Image 1: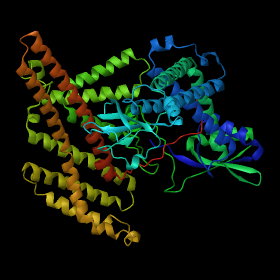
Image 2: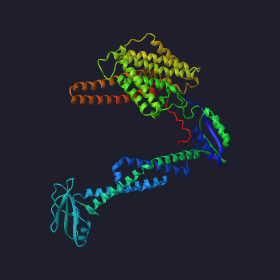
Image 3: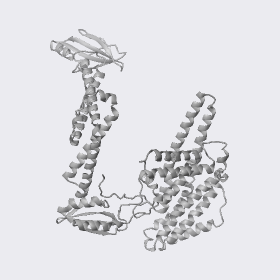
Length: 602
């Protein structure tokens, strides 16, 4: 049930804002909407502090994962391990991370120079500088392998070595200055910039930078003992940020501050009682139609498992729409059973749900119940179709569970069309009940008649079945009701386009019914993949240990892959039929704004 809301305005004196907000936060029943964009130095500083604290947590977690326990044990004593104040811990983490970053940049530079000079050997660049001061010129050159350079008259060309890029290095030695741009050495070459450090010095510096990075990482990892304190501190700052966002987003006029938002209708009186105690005024009004009211759904116990699906998919009906939880749960369960459709896979899902429920006492109950429901549905449909991990022939106790009618593909496709017609009919009957007693409810009767006409047409076009004689009357009568009552007379002018598009809408109804055949198609694909891997394993055989091992591995891989593909099919097709086909007929946009009360988070 979508909980009825009241638009709330709460007024108080400026000096009482913090105290009043504390009371509202303790109640935890008000969804606050900002009167103005929250801004202020205190809020900005709190945001920065929260970001800095959370970043420190991320840095510690990263280093704990990156550094092996053995390396941490051999690292020098941690400076961070001695601090106790959370602020000092955050500062220390960022200080060490900055040290890591600086040394990483240095290391990258050293490695670049080492790679650049790898073919020159080890020498002291200062010696070349001293030679040039004495009038002896030494130029370092580089040329591709295969290019033979020759020294000009009065100069000597010494080969120094080569690198992994097939480049050869030379030293051109002579007296006096030389202009390399006009010098002919018998081939193409480039001058190598004289390094500032020798190769041995670069290697030492690179090793030192690596050591400093490792030491800083070990010190950060040692600070993991303070992660709980950091988490608590981040939670406190987050609470402060939320409080300041509400405070800074309040309106203000003549020393009177006011807060706006929404509150469940059944929580207004409790808020009024507390408001009288703390000295503030409460104005609760009914929201206007079309207003962006947050959606709060209170699920009946029997359909509560579907909440986990809504949370995962991040979908929520608008406040002005309808809670379709029970329909979604019922048909999603049916769809999953048909999409996977194997008793063995279903029993596996049931076993997983039971195992997690027994071994993980804190596992979310809603998710387990949902998994159990889906497992039972898959098992039931697999039993009715006789699909048990591709086993053939079936044992007698499984054979008796089969429904022979479902062995025919045409029958299963017809069942898919029937499920689709029922699913969409529920949407229009629901609309009819909501619209009644306005005359437009008759249009919903017309749409329902069209749905069933399209069901018979789908059976005829796809399966070659004959159409009942009354189908044309269903279609014609439904179309007449739709044309006459689809739009109120006062709105005919602005909604005239709906009549122009009516033929396309009728075609869309037919396509929507056909769309449910995906339940059959995906189910057949699941069985086909299963049979293929079973056949591969059987062809290898189980005659000896080696072939049996390969066969078992193929079966494990094949059925695991099939389960993954089936799970994807559930997310794509099982969800789609609820959120697109059904929802378009029901008029659901799934554009709800979640109800997020201003409340203490810890």
